Image (cartoon, rainbow, N blue to C red):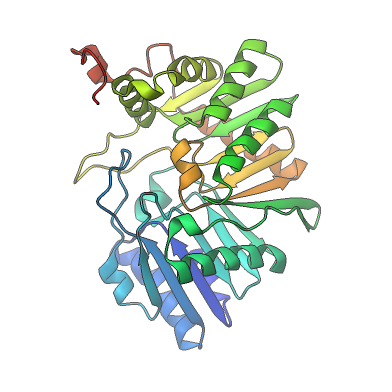
Length: 344
């Protein structure tokens, strides 16, 4: 699918990839498509994320295969978010089509993780993504990107509103909360973590009221890490009651393999999609405060048929994993001695 999308390029390809790490077989397919495009005269630019010295959440940023990237016929720039991530996973082709979603370009993203992809052919939408890419390419600073206006665009029988962070990060979290609160029939969510205060608050309210069919899936291992960090850091411990209430009804948790510095399997629950009645929000954005500050993108799509498909996807994947119980969110380390007070 990647090779087919890249193979359709006639003039330009702009790639913004958080992680790009492929084994020889898949590298031959994807790298081959990039080389063939360059041989046709396609101008190719490639932005990828790199680590920095500042503290970061667990799991930490991956290390893209710089050696592989250097073998490709592309103009490449490594972008270190200070202190946040260049977390996009998109491609703009010929200023006319966009590939985006939650999947990084790695073998484990494509084979071990739940993910969603979207391919949209629209000059108007592509122009927004191109504007976002140009800001990252020219300014080389995450914090100076994501200010494209989230205008409502007509696209066939759907309407699409593109959102970018960090320029509209806080506004985007409130947009999720508003759409969830307005839902009357259903809310479906897949997100590795849910920590954004506006979203937690409205989910806790929906759980208490019981007026909307609410269900979803998170990565249990990552959520346990969040709860542990919140216990240690008293400044955000106020979120814990909201979190427990928000996930108390209809949510399952994937017990993914805990992250290790080397050698661990990356089988996270990685899909990022929310359905609120007939509106779908999907992209690279976790429902988290850090997501507001990263370079991210989300498509808000109004279309009943797509909403039905995405709701069915969420229900299908959440059925594979156990429902979250009251004690499931506690990290195993919480069973041991705890510090008398949060560290300064």
